Each structure stands twice: as C-alpha cells, then as structure tokens.
Image 1 (cartoon, one colour):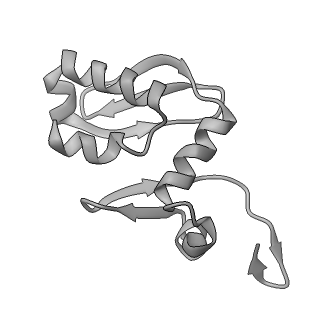
Image 2 (tube, one colour; image 1 turned 90 degrees about the horizontal axis):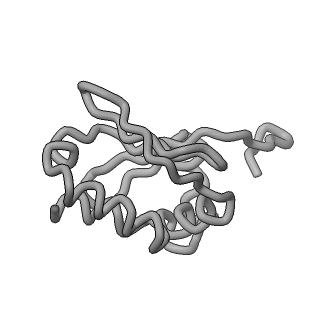
Length: 110
C-alpha cells in the first residue's frame, strides 16, 4: 500500500478515500495498476494489463485543478516546461501524463 500512497496523496480527500478503499478491497488491482485515467466530468478509469476498471465518480474541474496544484507543489509556473512536454515526473519516478489545449503566442507557450 505504501507505493500507491505516493500517488494517492495528490488527490483531493473524496477521491483519495474512494481510491484507497478500492485498493484495500482489491490488493491485486494495486499490484497490477498501470494507469489512473482522470478526465473532467467523466468516470475514472483504472487501467491494468488485463482490464479497464471504471470507477463511477465524475471528477469536477476544480478537483482537476487541485490535483494539478498538488502535483506542481502550488507553483504551476515552475513546472510549465514539463507540462508543455506533456508529463510531470513525481516522487517515486511516477510519470503523470497530461493532455489539454495550450495557447501559443510568438512561438512561446503561455
């Protein structure tokens, strides 16, 4: 459970509790987890090698922003280059992929 705690700590409390309970009930899921996919106003998807597990919890835009702020240690600007590359690397070597729309002016991202 220690490894998954490294990732769960970035989630707001309601999502943290939901995921922690899910992993406590299914230890194999914890071992086989490859990706947690979150999208605004969509259900979460836990991806393993064998299956995609849909968690019926729709993440709000504000929760996505809370996660981003935690990932960037409340300094999104400091992580701007990594975000523009499409991912962040956090403690434990975990890569957090990001997809979205960027605004580019004069060949520089804002």
